[in-house]
Amino acid sequence: MIELDTALHETIGARAEQQDAAGSALLGSGGGAQLLVLADGLGGHADGARASRMVIEAFNDAATGGLFDEPDGRRQALHGAIQEVNKRIHEATDPMDGHRSMASTAVAAILANGTVRWISVGDSHLYVCRNGRLSKLNADHSQAGIMIRHGYSPNDEAVINARSVLVSALTGRDIEEVDNPAHDVALEIGDVVVLASDGLNTLSDTEIALAIDQMYDKGAKAIATALVQMVIDRGLPRQDNATVVVSRVLGRGARAVEGDSPSLPLTQATTRTDIPTTPVPAPDEVTPVAPVPEIAVAAPPLVSESAVPHEGPTAAATAAAEPVAPLARTTAPTTASRQQPAAEATADAMARRKRRNMLIRIFLTALVSAVIAGVIVTQTG
Image (cartoon, rainbow, N blue to C red; front, side, top):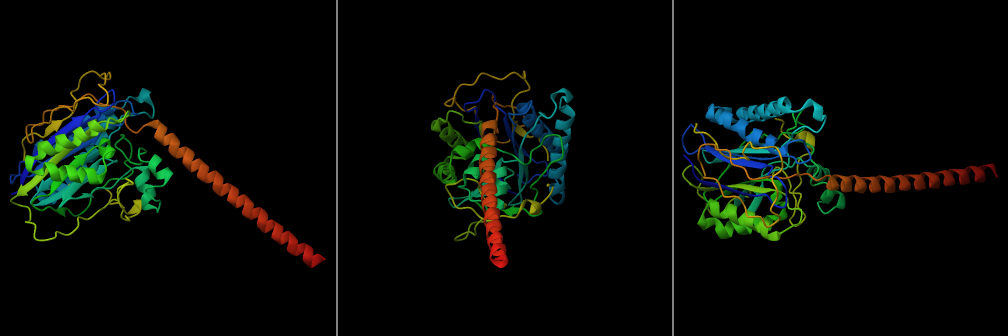
């Protein structure tokens, strides 16, 4: 048995459309187990909002079908749900649209028996906040995450520009990277589990942890609302959609905290520049791709595919969904994510680096040639 308090909240930001979708569901195996799901549609693709809804729908189908009920089968069930989403996106892609198919990120977590198990594709986040420390559990499948894993500093200009460039997403084609670890992570009483779209990147990890700490006693809904409101208050002119699913671990099934609890494992260093990073495995070491009322989801309603007029960066966040109700799709209006200018800036930075390296090689080649010529002249003289 695990006792949880779960809620979600979202904002459209400064976008024309809400392309995030999220939700939670009780699992039919009993014991308070819950499935949390969040997806971020890619705005540069044909229909990111529809793709993110398809993530929620596929996980809902798996949950209502009892596929997540058995603890020993959850890892494989999560893998199967991700593959099913990818299949549905492939089948729904308009052949006339060419390479601009629908696409979405996805992160799903099962909280049960005092542990959290997850699967993720893309750059949406899975955090656990414990004793005021925010730990990111899932891998970052952005170009920035890959660069950091290869030794780049998170403060490098190229890394900063690469944050919005994804190397893996659900596109209907082969999935480049999936984070579906073999082992779950133990939860403790007082932990707060957070799923978030990359719109929350507006806030630093320190700000997120502080907000969780300040609002903890008021409940999951208050935490989720506070995080989204902080994003709105920041008022960035190009603020992306921001969605969070928050679950407080209240007891029963989680371990009681005794003294200083050990640090949570970090499977992926953050790409933010305001906190230290931790070395992580190279990309080829990433683990490839684990009862049942309906899943309680917040996904945009399947309305017209035209963009909903945005209300600006200070638009009010949409109301939080009930923690664990039948999976009623409710999403707010949504936006284009992964902006092309960021990708172009990254390309420019890499091009400058290549030109610099080429000039260095030319200089060294000329220098070596001059030295060799001097030696020949000396010997022949």
